[in-house]
Image (cartoon, rainbow, N blue to C red; front, side, top):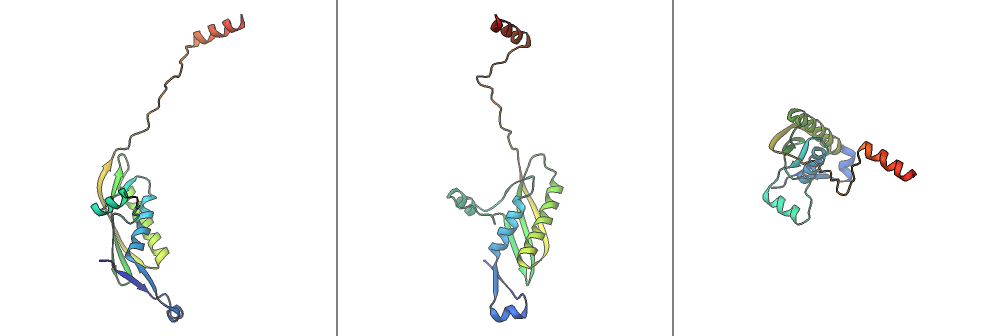
Length: 150
């Protein structure tokens, strides 16, 4: 069930109208902040979210759960990390970035950012191919230079 937050910024703006921020917006903000942290491979999500991505819809709120209690948010993030990353450091950086991004962009207070490491991905390095490259020994290079001069 999607919940919407109705924020009353101040009395003057209330006279003009209300500001409503959906959970999905908060999820996207948290997802983008998380994806910017080095060591994060991907966000874990539901089967429905995976099918949506296959169909071409990128869901930046995937793997994010937001619970609102008034104007206080608790955010749960389900992620996959890259093998070799220092998991506690990655998690701390995510917590800091998500808290700062959500609070700055929405005016909410973020009480907790809970990180759930769902997996580790081993990223393969691109293979360097030397097809057609000629390796010339130092002596051969000298002999070829002499032949060209003759």
